[in-house]
Amino acid sequence: MTNTDFIQKIQSTIETNRLFTKDDTILVGVSGGIDSMTLIQSLYELGYSVAIAHCNFNLRGDESDGDQDFVVAYANAKKIPIHVCSFDTKKTASERKISIEMAARDLRYEWFETVCRLNGYTKVAIAHNQNDSVETFFINLLRSAGLKGLTGIPMTHGNVVRPMLDVSRAEIETFAKLRQLRYRVDSTNLSNNYMRNKIRNLILPEIQKIAPNCMEAISTSMSHLQQAHAVYSQAMEGKKSLCCTSNARGFAVDELKLLQQDNSQTLLYEILYPCGFNTDVISQIYQSIGNQSGKKFETEHYVVVHDRNTLFVEPRQAEETPQNLFISEQAHTYRFGDCELQFERVSIKDFTLEKSSDVASLDAAKLRFPLTLRVWQKGDSFVPFGMKGRKKLSDFLIDVKVPLLQKQKVLVLESAGEIVWVVGYRISHEFAVTEQTNEVVVFRKK
Image 1 (tube, one colour):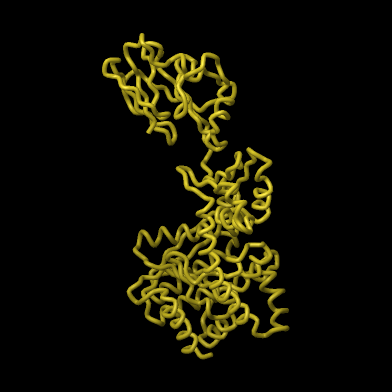
Image 2 (cartoon, one colour; image 1 turned 45 degrees about the horizontal axis):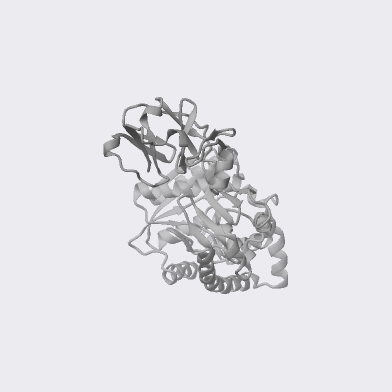
């Protein structure tokens, strides 16, 4: 393959997949390695409007700094705009409790998004090639990642595009040699401490001995799987709609409707895998259905709770120490987390009872300000409206079937240590409006 043939192959990929046009401004991720140097050089020669983004992850000491100097020198020589960012990758990995590789990936794409937003770049070009996609196929195969994982690396994802997915690493190396293109070599690519490197350096060379055209063959198979996955996904979306419902915090899976579907465990996998749950955990969640109410499962970003006949799925929120909020006598609006309360004083002659669990009408004479708004605690009790005896709040929440995830966030309104309202559920009988009431305090949950 000549230099011209290689460049035209990339141009063909761009046009066939409609990755971008000459009207786009393209931010190219350039590490300094052979792949990214080939990509930026190709797009530069094809006449696209490009800029360079280089990430220094500070993982290889002087070698990382050398990569940065090399890319900056290339950009200056070609008069290409360049953006450079230095990351404390190890610290981020520790703080987020993820692997260094995952931290580097997240930092890179988060920064790319910021650079695009601030500078008006319309696309982000990444130098993944055919070999990278095949390697990803094997990684996902070994991780039981499902059908989607076997489709390899996507050509596009949002504004991220990969113009070199149709060219092999051998073609890239030939182009670089013929073009006398300078590039940096990442020493960690030679180490077999990582799964991808083991597949790249040990497994694929052996497969190529058996089938020299294995890269093209596997790529063709992945293309077929992509088409099959498109049909499969459409069918799965229909099944999801039968048993999943959205709510204010996330979504819920009706377990009885789930179990009525054919291949229900596979359906549950498709529902939960996008939330970060792996195959083993999804299998545990499936086994918990019907016999482990209250069981909780968590990933970095999501939590699933099996509660009665429902799986509640919600994004995880940063845990904060609940603080008491004090409410004065002046009519006002108060906010506690995602709960907003409004209240007003009303003369009994102007009062109209609103029958809603989000409205609490209380006898003003029985209240002692300031009132306290807080998260409920173990040991709390009150006299639910319509009853004469006290009841543990924990038992009350069970009786009204509050899901476990919501139960943890239930608020109570107190007057002088007595619960006057379980916010959004029930007022206390002892503070209810009676025939002797002259003035009413009305709380509304927004």
